Image 1 (cartoon, helix red, strand yellow):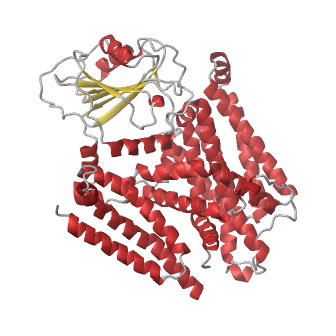
Image 2 (image 1 turned 120 degrees about the vertical axis):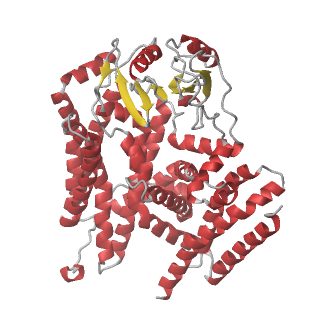
Image 3 (image 1 turned 135 degrees about the vertical axis):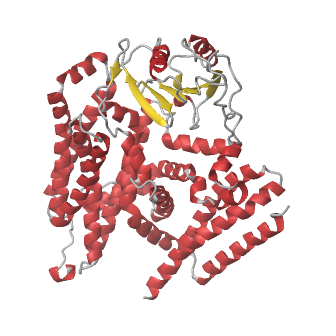
Length: 509
Length: 93
């Protein structure tokens, strides 16, 4: 440890990045994918077909709910939006939830394959499949480490602007260092925004003392800061809920002009006299996580008193939450954020490789620690993309009639990743890199081919209906395959320039 | 060896000490906001908890860039004591 400020920042940057870099890389990459969560789900459930008209959609849902959900406690209608074709109804009766997806034809009920969907990436990136075992705490710690690494990284590059305009492609270690500097400068605002908002999502959970001391816990605090609606009396006299939504629809239209403004409609205690309808607006019009809501009576459709205003502090927190989830972003901004997410993942990946390269250039005697860092680098940086591609292939290949299919998909993901880790330990480093990169690109090429082989109608429909989600997904996968193949060949051609760890056998034991 | 201990104590100061200071801050400054009539208590809890992460971050950076280790720990203990005093004086108001 050196007393000089800049030197201690360099030290801090080096080690805060190394300690948790692999975890950060996984979180950033899966988090980046969840910018396109509904679109990925759409691709993973090809049975969901395009629903063109919004006319009568609510009324058709209500007819189904009247048939199936008699005396239920809640009804829910999820309407399709610009981004997803998922149109489903849900009713909860005696604590059990039932779901149904609806199709465009009259009375048509779809049965999409059970799939973890794009939501898997979203859940994975903040729980690491460890919800209930401290997964969210680990993610929070990782966010704090990233903030420290970004902050100290700023001081590592003294020649901020000169670094920005230099990129030498001849020597691998130089290329990586300079790419790391450029990408670092570009992604500073994005990384700070993402990490701060990530911490703010669970702000009370990570630092619960104040809330517990003054308000009696997180739940009581949020209830006090953003009060909900009054509790409903279940025993109130029985009333038949609305059959025709136009009464409410007209009022909603006058408040929120425009097409496709409703995201979700909830009926609370639909068969009670006090029953109410909560209509939620789409999220792309607000920075906040909570979109606007309107309340109506469930049998007369008359407007009721709305939600009390949430406190300022809660609103600020919701904006942080909204910034993180980016539902407000239209398609071009979304791609920009996606690109920034990919760049940040690349920033972490290059940082990890540079750490190892610098040490291998300096020291003669390689250490077991270098060996482990090298193998973890391979398993994370080339292994995770391979795992993600396998997850997509699994979605297409697994039998659609399997029981617990969604969780089997997740198992496929986790086992493939473990296999990548073993593979990276068993093979010589450079071969492990090249092989995993090549398998990834092979998987990327196979994916559209499998899809075409299984059902060529999908591609035809997508082209004729202008289903951009499906087409873009396939094109992007092919493009990714190309990039991975290029990288693999480029790496294989660099014979002498890339250093690998050589350990004596007796050192390993 | 000396280097290793140096790193260990700084890391502990950053992670554990920083958390202690920010937790103490998050409890102690709620009565300050209420006393200054800036906001009511529940809102103050949310505001101060959010701000406490800035405190945490500052402690982390400071514990890695100061010259000696002992002043870092001394300041951590002093800050926690200061927070406790503020809470003790203003907490009952």
